[in-house]
Amino acid sequence: MFNNLINGFNKILDRLKKPGTVRERDIEAVLDDLKISLLEADVHYDVVNQFLSTVREKSLGAQVHKALSPSQQILKIIHEELTTLLGSKSVGLSFKGTPSVIMLVGLQGSGKTTTAIKLAKYFKEQLKRKPVVVGVDFNRPAAVEQLKILAESNGIDVCNAKTRNAPKAVKEAKELAAKNGNDTVIIDTAGRLHIDKELMDELKELKNDFNPSEILLVADSMLGQDAVNVAREFDGLLDLSGFILTKLDSDTRGGAALSLFNTTGKPIKFMGFGEKVSELEVFHPDRIASRILDLGDMMTLIEKAESHFDKEEAIKLEKKLRKNTFDIDDFKDQLKQIKKLGSLSGLMSMIPGASGMMGKLQGMTHPDEELKKIESMINSMTKKERQLPDIINGNRRKRIALGSGTTVNDVNKFLKSFDHMKKLMKHLPKSGFSGLGI
Ligand SMILES: Nc1nc2c(ncn2[C@@H]2O[C@H](COP(=O)(O)OP(=O)(O)OP(=O)(O)O)[C@@H](O)[C@H]2O)c(=O)[nH]1
Ligand SMILES: [Mg+2]
Image (cartoon, rainbow, N blue to C red):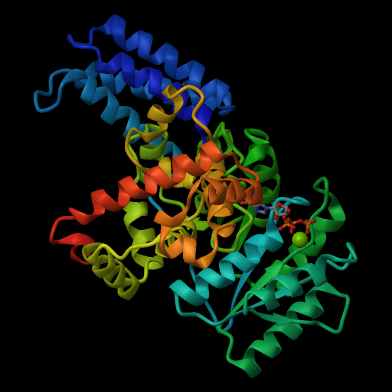
């Protein structure tokens, strides 16, 4: 997520970390770097200029303060201005009426259907609501079916409308909601390659008929600053309540995220960062700014850990570690828990300084690839080998390497690290995992 941007900002941070006071000349150099980074990130030109002039003005005026060093002050200003650019504070959804209607709109392939399911799951699990989804794209033959399959496999209520008319289908969904006790109807609308009159008329009709609590534009972040044009058109016709930015996992630049709020005045409410249903997060401008500046995002990491980790499991694990009976099967369970939090590279971006460090470690393999390798090695082990790794001799190592498509060297490396980790964990402080409250 935003890797290029993060790398660009890392250079700026290195410059700011150099000892000595920051003079006007230094500020100009920082601003030049900022400009390059933001333009390379595909941020809208107007947004870049405005950002630079605010940072310049505040940096020059800030030097009288004594509490922070001049470079800390500049860093703080950049963080504040980035946060403002991203929308200042996170804006929640509004739910009005029973059922509340949430309408997802956007171009073809932007991620509407995936996001409808992600949102429904979020509503159900985090907000304790009872959503039902309804697909109204009757142009693309498989569209409604795709939503239905996704909904059913994720335990989300879905309305299989009998009609092939969008407003009538939503009406059916509302009737079903009333019968089933669903308090939210999420409409997955049709997408088009380009914005056209027919699509807009249909969306406007839905808006007029159902007065949705939220009309959210699902925008593909890979569009970069082009997302601004799409957003302006949809907003002009529908008066959007906000955005859901998708595919941030593939977006190394960040142009859409940094341009949308500033150019439309509408907030980004959620972000999608993967194909999995769990890969949706509330968009927190300040936390994203911290991630971009590689100051880490420990808040999100802690919240994720709290919501996904099983406390009982953590206590059980702690006991095993203390008794030194932790085996490769337990390790596999732990990997599963960690994977619930999302991709490893995503997690790394939340740890302060980690992205910068990764960038500097030349030849470092992608952490998610490493994880896959380890998993296939573990899967190629017999139960006995997992419980008693000491029995894994040369022949067994060869077999495991062959079975997992890795090399004996990889297996050696993994077993050595496992052994090392086990030794380290034996000396875990008394407060341990349960003491951390996770
Ligand atoms: N990597 C990644 N892929 C995503 C994300 N969101 C959606 N996708 C993928 O993008 C593709 C299109 O997603 P859909 O949800 O079908 O998009 P849509 O807007 O409903 O498309 P139409 O119905 O054709 O208009 C699918 O392959 C999804 O798995 C995301 O946050 N990250
Ligand atoms: Mg779709």
